[in-house]
Image 1: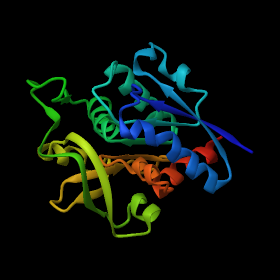
Image 2 (image 1 turned 135 degrees about the horizontal axis):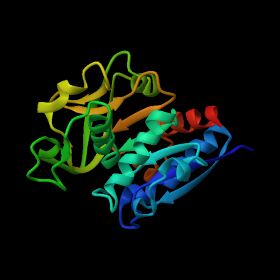
Image 3 (image 1 turned 45 degrees about the vertical axis):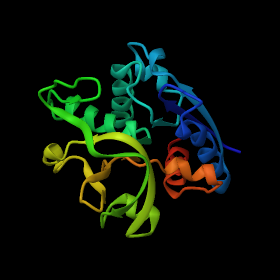
Image 4 (image 1 turned 90 degrees about the vertical axis):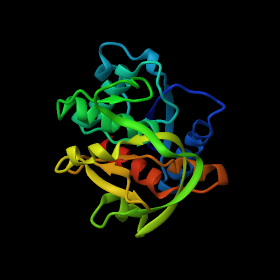
Length: 232
């Protein structure tokens, strides 16, 4: 049986529900696909100057929730590695926020910042939500033509959140023609993005992994593992 090593990029905390859920989410999806996964927690503080060499042995990268990370620059470098090298990437919650930040910094050349760590930044790309989504559930509309809609096989789904920050709506237009919006909430705000032309690059503000806490396989996690299996 094929074994896929998956880098879980983030700072493990056993009290974080998503961190409890992610290994089980991967196991359930791998079981459905008939493969084996070896999820490896990769604390951002361990990321040195050669992130590409450190992550080269992994089939895919999942940037997990619970930011700010101990080493933000390391996390951004890891996301850049996955984006530029075509390595399957999934970012959830904090991973979504930092995927947007990495793209704005390294592709668009903007001096963007995360308001949680830089509250006085001139360009708070990631800002505090007007209404907290901490331990909330909500309906999400999947954009027609998106990979995400194909994965779910539905126009609308309900997902769980545990966050207080997201993309500042003021800056959504900077990604037009670059990152594709894949999902929006009932107010029309961006809740997922994807990168076309990449093997698999999807980032969601919601946390699909939490389905595993109820023993359920999640189609997005399964699609992520399937993409990882294809590149090994």
